[in-house]
Length: 121
Image (cartoon, rainbow, N blue to C red; front, side, top):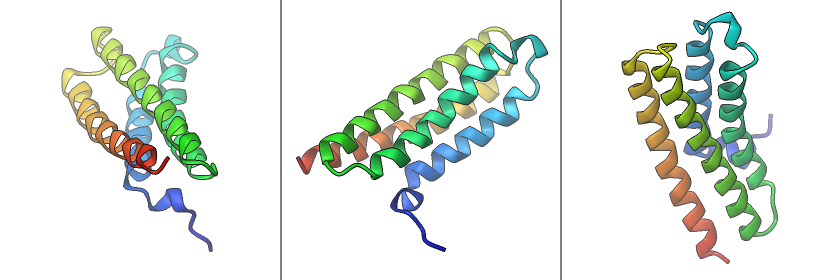
């Protein structure tokens, strides 16, 4: 089986961990949030790893950097939604903190990846 370049990126692997974390957290959300915050959180998480993957398939480093930037924007959506989830008592402060630590790590990795892509333009 062939391994694609994005699968080797630690930032992509960590974004998968964030997605798994979010899916587990949202299982306990009220049913009334199924099409609200649950859907938004899950879609934003998936967008992070998907944009990392899609960016690796682009030809130019400018395009690669753009997809990395989009992934970062989605990551900030996830952070915002975790904060709101904590405000609404859907998750604990500890769960929010755990998510934030992983988001910080992924954000730093995305920033370094984008900078390396921009340096090649």
